[in-house]
Amino acid sequence: MMLTATDATFDLDAHHAQTIDMPEIISALSFALDLTEGAVAGHALRSCVLGMRIAAEARLNEFQQSDLYFALLLKDVGCSSNSARMCQIVGGGDDRALKAGVKLEDWTQPGKPKLSTLKLMWNNVLPDGNALERVLRIAQIGRAQHKNNEEMIGLRCDRGAKIVAKIGLGQATAEAVRCLDEHWDGTGYPSGWRGERIPLLARIAAVAQHLDVFATEKGTEQAILVLEERSGKWFDPELVRVAVSLHKRGKLWSNCLAGDSEGTTRDTVLAYQPSDTVPLGADKIDNICEAFSDVVDAKSPFTSRHSMGVAEAALTIANSIGLSADRTKLIHRAALLHDLGKLRVPNSILDKPSKLTNEEFSVVKEHPALTQQILERIPSFRLMAQIAGAHHEKLDGTGYPNHLSAAELSLESRIIAVADVYAALSEERPYRESLDLGQVSAIMRKDIPTKLDPECFEALLTGLQTAKIPA
Image (cartoon, one colour):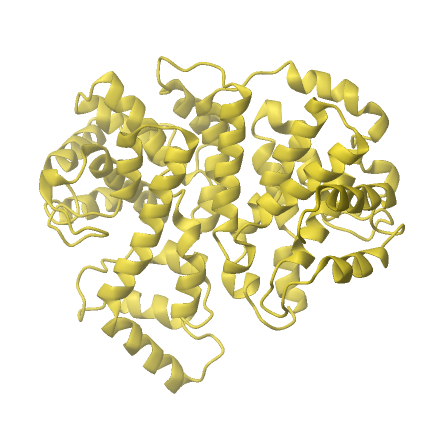
């Protein structure tokens, strides 16, 4: 049953009675990072289990294991930042499919592409071009491989390290994320470091993620074979030895294969959490929500601050209406995270300058439900999940994904729906320039009171005029 405005306070009390810690929230939100990488759901969790087992066998101390734990869960936190550029380089191909596929290829040997690499490129480069145009674009990409890798991985790694710092984790965790794609022999990126110059935690994370990727796609035996083939090239030989030893003794893969239940894998991840884990304060939760809103907004240049804009507009409405501090905080966090599910939408759709096809729009319409599913993995976020998941619902039942009616929509959801439309119209899009407040309000009035809540809309205008916030 959906939350209504009349029962919001009761459910909010239950919401505030729950606590949350860093491992719980990060392990759940890691599913959003899997989306942007085109990975099989739970990739970050499985990588975490594998990496922590390798770390324990290699006898890392407690502090190192604590830093590694969050580096493994957040290793892909910068990945959305290169999605738009990757889509541009390949001429509109599916950035998620490319990211997933390239992990299975050895891209350190320019001029020696395998058939599988060429097939991956052919399936994802310039999809609307003719055969000659596609061949020429693939050749162009091949010639610029080093430059492209340097740019793509640099964007990802630098952004990832900054987000880790924003969350409030240590320098060692940030450096592990920054150096994830460095290789033992110096052929990696972004700095071309080699050997023990690469942080140990980054070396472990690299081994762990490749074990999961290959085990998921090819099976555990093939994953170990690839690890051994790349020992001394991509990977630290000593860490390869440790992983192979665990594999041979049957101590590597339990509860961390793609076919295992999500609950079992996540329970295993939480069993490895640092011993000094404590419940998070409100400020720390806010930092995490803001950090993940940055992940979402980084996916497209047209949404560079959309989540923050929605959150600011939602706060304006909530304050104008006079909601309590607790309800306002809930709305703010839900607004920051409302578009997590968009990380699954390819940039070829997000950044398309022309009208979307019905099939493309169907992909877009999946994102609110995905947002809700991710947030519902956190017990204390379930109310927030419901609110965020309804941000495209309309009062007359014509919204998506569930076609909810006015009676089924909470005041909180109505606020975010109005804030989302306002922010979107105020921002530049691939197919139009940004609109001023007069234009935005004129467009929004056409949907009042049939689709958008009139009280929330008037509260937004009042708040904007009172605060003199530029549109």
